[in-house]
Image 1 (cartoon, rainbow, N blue to C red):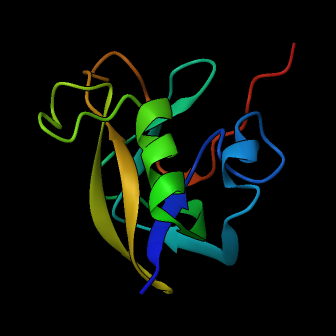
Image 2 (image 1 turned 135 degrees about the horizontal axis):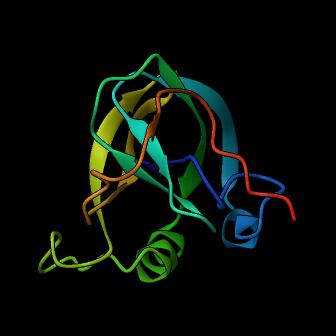
Length: 122
């Protein structure tokens, strides 16, 4: 059985961290109404909040790829709420997929509740 991840930011194909998933199996896109995004500047953060629909890309990954993503996202398995990101399973059209959720407060930021995050251009 494959481990699935759904990505919404710099890990998406064509963006700055897509090399982490270069050898993963791309399954396709989905739209999730169970997350909202926040623009943190160089990357976005997701919160488990209702939205009109956030675009994600879903990949099947190996245990080693998931571990590399955990390091990138500063996920702490022994203390998930202490790292920069936590990860939780969310339903996608391909099955349950891990999504990294941003732990710090976003109270001063406006949510992105539809579509997708795009990197800022200079």
